[in-house]
Length: 113
Image (cartoon, rainbow, N blue to C red):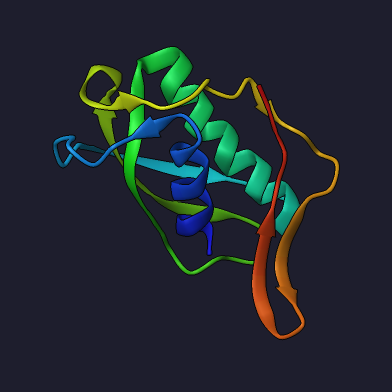
């Protein structure tokens, strides 16, 4: 679920289709509720773009711990991707959903542009 959330978030501002495989970078976010972990993970994406000029091409998240997420981004330079929109400035803490609803996984977050 977290992998799909990161991919959808990146799709807001970048098409990574033609990019290289990328360089691995581990991440750890937490502790927090599932909703907070979602915000923290998306904030890691923004940090990589804003500070390092790198965009996640793929992400792998280990099975979640009790209150944290660990995994690996494959990051590519921003000049290897095609811009398709504005990069978000942050993720709102309002209206978050990261869990099951009606027996299905659902993820919802609002990006501040």
